[in-house]
Each structure stands twice: as C-alpha cells, then as structure tokens.
Image (cartoon, rainbow, N blue to C red; front, side, top):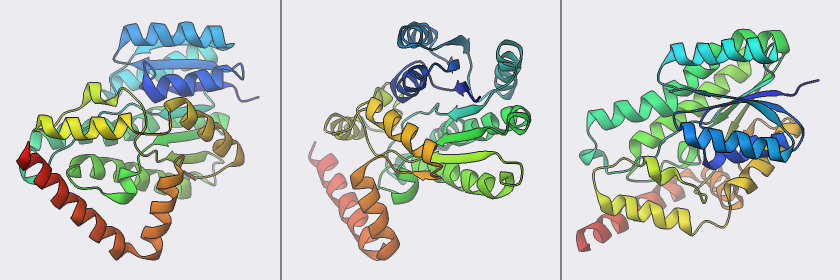
Length: 269
C-alpha cells in the first residue's frame, strides 16, 4: 500500500496544505523546508489530521541535503511512494531590470531544486514504482509580462516533467505536474524583484484570488488519483490554456497589452 510521501517547501502555504490533505488519509510524511518553525507547526497539524511523519531542514539548492532527506526516508519509512517537489520562491520585474543574480537565484531554487529532488529520490521511486509530483505554475504556460525569470524556471519544470513522463513510463513511475495560477499564499514572503511596485501588483493578484492553497491540494488529490499528468487547478487557468492552444496570437497580444498597462501604472506610482 502506498502511503509514504516527501514534500519540499512543507513549512507553509501549498506545501503545508498538501501535507494536511494526505495526512487525512493517514499517510506518513517526510516534511522539508528551510523554515524550521513552520515545519514544526506543519508536523503538529499533520498529526492532528491523522497522519504522522518527521521533519528535516532542507535547502533544495544543495543536492547533498536532498540526498540526506532521501536517506532519512529510507531509514524511517523504508522507502518512499510519492515525492512532491514544491519548494519555490516568487520573483518579478521587467527583463531589463532583472540582474543576472536574480536569474541565478530563481533558476537555482524553482528549476534546479526540482531537478535535484527528482535525481535524489529516483532510486527509491524505482523500487516502489512511485510517483513524482512537480509543482510548476500557470506562468510556465502563459508567460505573463514582468516575470521572465519565474516563467522560464517554471516552464523548465513542465519540460522536465514531460521528459520524465516519457522516460519513466517503462519503470512504472508516475509523473504529474501541477500548474496553479495565483492563489492565496505566503509566496510574497520570498518575493524578489527590482521594484516595490511590482511586489504590490503581485500582492493584489494573490489577495484577489478566489482559490486557496487548501482548494488546490484537494484538486491535486483528486487529479492524481485519476492519473492526470498536467493538473490545472484553476478554472480560469484551464480556459487560458485552451485559448492559447487554439489561438496563441490572441494570448500574446493580451500579454503585450498587459505589459503596457503595467509599465504605465509603475510610471504613475
């Protein structure tokens, strides 16, 4: 019976809600994050919800910390059934304003953190015929303006997931990629961008979202059970993706108009 899951970025937000959703099914959870107080709180909530597990501080930029996490799953759980590469950070800013350091920081966490997570846990998943769940973003599919480094990192997560879907099928390892749109979360705590105005604009989008991290975790649970590969939890996101597939130029035009509006707004502030 599959009931062992590892989650990165489990100290808050979506990672915590994923932990709680699976905890309600009695799963054992390996919870990791750089935020240790948040992790302790998640574990407490997981136990109250009917699950159990352990916590381990882990910075996904450091491969040795991820292999240590895989080793801990081996020792404590005798393996793993599902890994959720969820750790991520927010970023924004027009391309001309983003530094190369901004790019390195974004790619190292949001893309390479996922690559390293998959790599560290693959031997365990080969044994259990388990599942990989990578958290990307609608930004991977829509490429909104003023977030090119975030878009590229998340698009990389989708491309990685598609590659693994093809490569790991013979080994009976399931692969899923989740592309949420903006949702109510504490993602702004990690936000990095050249202008405060950009952070304020992203903050507004997060606040106005009709969907919570708990809603996304529930949607994920149902979609993974059904075996869906690309999981788009937002109705609006599904509609936008359908439009892009049907008429990409219409979407590009809308994004260009949005970029103009954002530039005008930041100039007037």
